Length: 151
Image (cartoon, rainbow, N blue to C red; front, side):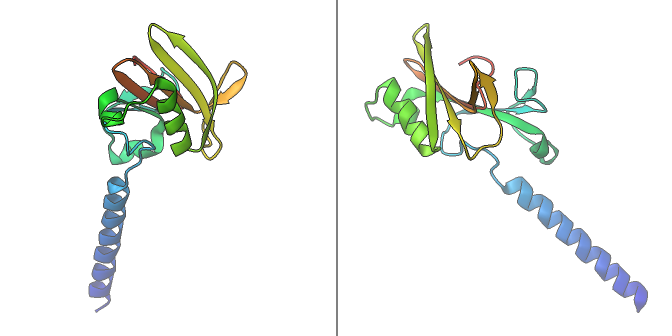
C-alpha cells in the first residue's frame, strides 16, 4: 500500500510540475503584446551583445533582458492618420512613459522614454532610458530598453 501511495504522489508531483511548465510557457512574456510584427528578444544582456532570438523556449524566459518589435506603420495606425510625434506619444501613454528626448536621422525619428514601473534601463546622455520608439515613413520599431539592430 505504501508503494502505491508513493507512486501516486510521484505521478501527482510530475503532473503538477508539467502543468506549471505549460502555464509558464503559455504566458505571453512580451511587453509589446498589442503590437503585431517581427519580434526579437535579447538574452543575457540588454545590449547589442545579447543573444538575439525571434522565439523563446521555456528555458529562455529567465534570460530575457530586452525586446523589440518591428512593424509596418500602416499595420500599427490601422488607417488612422497620425504624425510621428503622435505615434510616439500614444505609445508612451500606453506604457505610462515619459518621453525624455528625441533624435532624427535619415527620416527616422527616435523617441527615448522612461517607464518607472520597469526595473531595467540603460543610461543614455545621463538619463535612464527603457523605452525606445523609432518612427520612419513606413515602419515602426519599439524596444526595451533599446532597439538593437536595424529599424
